[in-house]
Image (cartoon, rainbow, N blue to C red; front, side):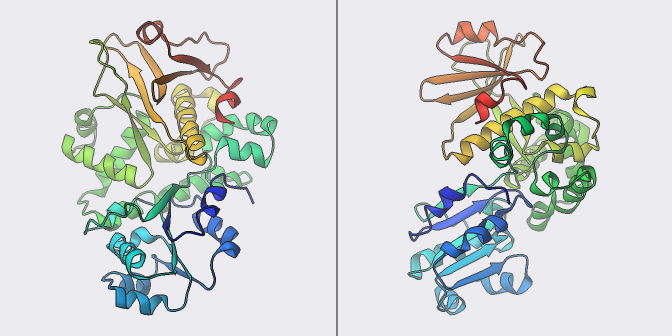
Length: 374
């Protein structure tokens, strides 16, 4: 069993009355994590699964009276795959407001916004955490820094889903199965997408343009969709923890791009499955994209696991000078340039250093990556 870094964060919140919401892609181990710490839950405990039809039916039109009857004498309610339950936000709000001495823990493989036809914000009533695929830091703690660095090339190709980590030579088959079984499940459940084949084409186009500037219009031309639909689909893909966007950083110098964006995947293996590319890392023409996506996502996991999120961007000028990745915390700027080949010359853009002389700058290679991830 590989220890998950956010376990302690969740355990610390079990004693108060706020709802705990644990979100993240399917198959990242949300239920396994809760089962591991269930001895700490207030007893007795009821486990409800939103994938089961009778559970969805019982909870789809909630009232406080009905919920009290369903909960009975249970002190903790765990709702797995809660995003499958229509208006789950209203259900959780009623429990929080109307039923005392019950702790609710809800997991979801997509944002609850997909299921909520009624907008019931849970502001002040919840603790929310994300569980992503395993991280570099978690794997180092499970084995060793030396072992994990030796496996970097494989991680760039097959990613960090728990089932893939334990695949024992069948990584390609398992990541393909995961992509085919779960990739669009939540989106197609709740959204009336008339042509899911075009959604699949869009994900493939995003995979080819991973860690590069994107245009809704150009993506639409590739997929046969208008720009508005492309934007809507990307919003849905973000809510389902498949991709995420980084926006361009600008503090108003005239030559900086202000409204551009890049797309990143939450897992390299899932991205490679979408386009069926599993050749070894050092032989690939997209190795720069793989390395940048891997590092930017690992930084996201590190901040998430430490409960210390920062604003995240990239930087680019109209003259195509760029910085791969930037983090901001207050007035502090930290810039990262990603280079897989540690022998290649790598520097943080001089134009950026001139524009922001107080910023920290780092070149990230496979030789020094642990300095930024552990």
